[in-house]
Length: 476
Ligand code: NCD
Ligand code: ZN
Ligand code: ZN
Image (tube, rainbow, N blue to C red; front, side, top):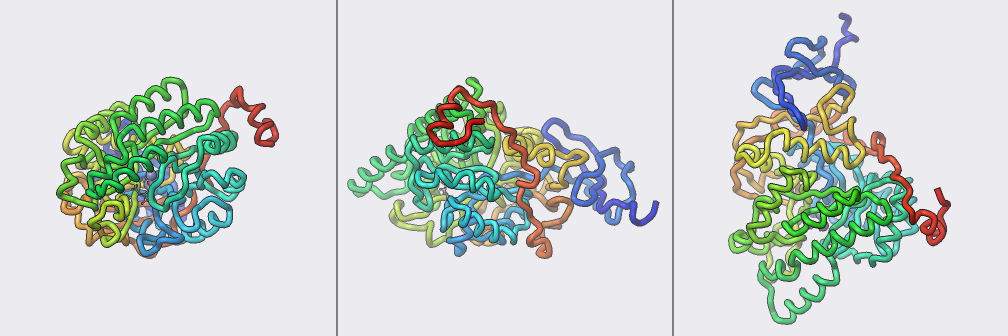
């Protein structure tokens, strides 16, 4: 075989994990793509061979919910530190949220975000904002390269005003015509605002008062209402950060009605509960809040039975001084997570909560399918992008917030013991993390997923003619 006929990389001796199989196999990678998957020893000659004996090869995680803060809040994170954290965590694709400054609600703001993303180590999708006042910008955002939309039904970091139900319906009608999915911060603003005002007036400012302001009804009401709008318009929707057992009912009911609805939960809602408020104080403040213990058990079960489609992190970096406050209402909400998701969830696999194939299904396969990236991403098979997390399932680690690649050195997971750690991360065949070290030369290797994203247009709905007339659109 001539030197030119060699492939770029063969990974040998490892165990391959997909959403439906676990098997001993080698992988050949060429020009960023998986060229062959096969029996050990059956691979073509390669310029480089990586011995993965004792290790597992997983499709890289696809985290559809991160906040990389650039532009606007780069003291908390930027695209370089955020995607470095992803690379360290075995995450090969991220979807970044629009609550930056300026918010990603216009093509000009999107251009700033795309410019910032040129530093990325891993592949990415950008969310456009769906708000009260930018309905006329949605199609230009699609043209500009967003991979989906984000709608804040309730207030959270950035204090972007929540759209009225009317504006939301119009936004869904427009986006439905293009097939892109709309992710929802599904907490109803008006309920929370009244409760928080009353709590504050009564001088209540302890960590648990944040939970009192946001009982599960705010989430149930929002999920159910969004599902009705999605059903009417044919829009695809995604429920972010499911925190309660109660949301599972409207989610299941909407799926049963044929709504194209997906849902995620995050490690914090599977690991923490109200017992942690005393120990963690204001650090635990997050939207939606950490709830009573019975919720987390229901969320694990919903991941296993498929009601919840995927795991995401809501990577929400803030500085320690922004998190540690005496008055809960002045503490910023959320903490970094893109780097700790895989070790924490693999610990759950180790503890028997999910199988390793379940983990691949919720961390990579399902997000790839929901966001139109499958079969290029979300699986280990010939023709797919060589996005691979190579993990040591036996490797223990104690999470140390000081060692995070994220700029935000504070997390509720600090000092937690995990079992299972990514040791190498490949993005389109290139090492972005190798032997637990960031490959700094790979800065800028990340690309927008729009080049491969396929979101087929849904069937027109019975409302389509009226919609076209009301919104002044061409009917399709
Ligand atoms: C997120 C943030 O900081 O951007 N915070 C959070 O508590 N989850 C915003 C969000 O996802 O709601
Ligand atoms: Zn949110
Ligand atoms: Zn978020």
